[in-house]
Image (tube, rainbow over all chains, first blue to last red; front, side, top):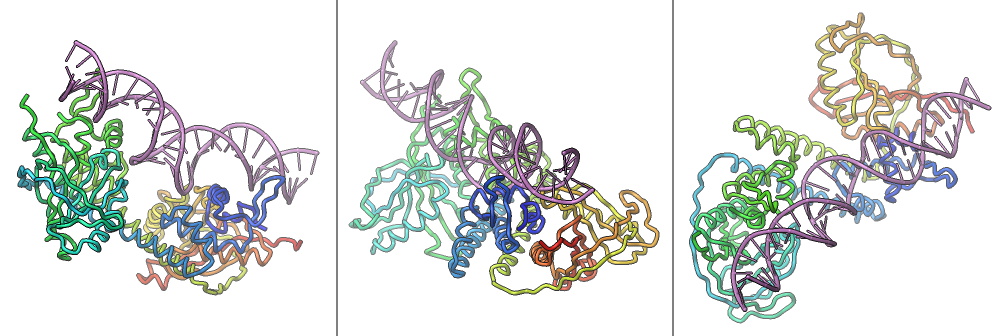
Length: 265
Length: 265
DNA sequence: TCTGCACCCTCTCCCCGGGGGAGGGTCCAG
DNA sequence: CTGGACCCTCCCCCGGGGAGAGGGTGCAGA
């Protein structure tokens, strides 16, 4: 039987951390003296402690660590670990994208932007909509668009989306993705929706979406400079996307910001 | 002049976050109404907001973000950013190592370990020592060993280190690295130290240090199984290291744990 | 000019995975 | 038996936000 200090020396986990892992149910001491509260560990628990240590180095949240340890089947365990590694990988991708975008931002570049005002009429489309958290938008979008593709057999135009301003202001808001088609079906989450007419300030974002906020910013500056105010959700139209070409450089996303003219002050 | 909500829509930074950035002095609104406290931003501040957004995506701490924004010189700025990217890179290396080590840990492998008891005599060496935080050990070690190498011209054996148990239990403790040599010099941080005699449970760790804690754990289990108790700081001896060969697979680190025999219960 | 509502303000509390320290009980060797 | 090392619990702190309470403002339409 090892005291917490001895076990700490053997595992290189601090005493405090061991106590927290006990409280969290991650690593129960082999024995706890119910009179004094002293924790006593077994030498056989060292490997488990080391697995926890490794998982924490990989930033696996404590509840996930517990799930991994609790699953007795090596297959399930491997799957859970692989799952987290997948997340690490995609995070790395985002980091790389942010680095590239940051470099572009810090380079004082002119990058003029073509913006046009265009009045779009009301149109009825096949849509999927929901209230979504900002961090979950990408995953939600993938699912919603897949369902749309499965249901809409003969689209009559590029797909698009409407994004509530609250999504950016508060971190969550209403999101709607659609495909235009002649007779919008109703199936599962897919249902017909009539998008209202609007006057839009429109520009096109080229390439991946990692730095689409820069294009938003430029569009916003144009809107402000031209004495317009924002009214209603942003509209994106996916003119050329991953479904059309694997080359991100060829992707084209149209951004339309509903505006109305402000009286000159 | 843009209200905080409008600016939020233009930058995709949440209203709350913008307020925090104001409080932190990161992004001052162009005007603050001193009667109502209302914040008003200028469209020209959009690029700055986006740079902050990117830096935060890269997990740059807010104070560092401020330093980067405050430095008017693009060179300094680029250096600060490169600095952080360097840190990201080394973190990635550690992540990769942890993944490899985790795979090894989860594979139920026997991996027996040769452990021997050996009595080492007292010896006087050239040493550098300090109280160090656990997270800083690697950096401290690099500096201390470089200084030792510069001062000790004719070493009489492999370098080594003594690591206080508190380093692992509390996260900080006394650390000493040394080179044995005939007449230990005194220069800068380098000074003669007499390492006391000790009885050591000794084993050898093969390869990189990323999973040296596993070897520690196995050594610890052996110590416990053989009814020995730990007494005093761990000793490492760098038999083969990066200075000898660039191939990590050939590295050999001897781990010696001071022990004393426990009376059989 | 009034009123309603969207907007904005500050304040406090919560999250995670730890670290720091206070204050007090326990173990064990000399 | 005693002193010191060891262990316990409890509370506060960090950073970068999110959630919500409670109350003041700006402005457009009636």
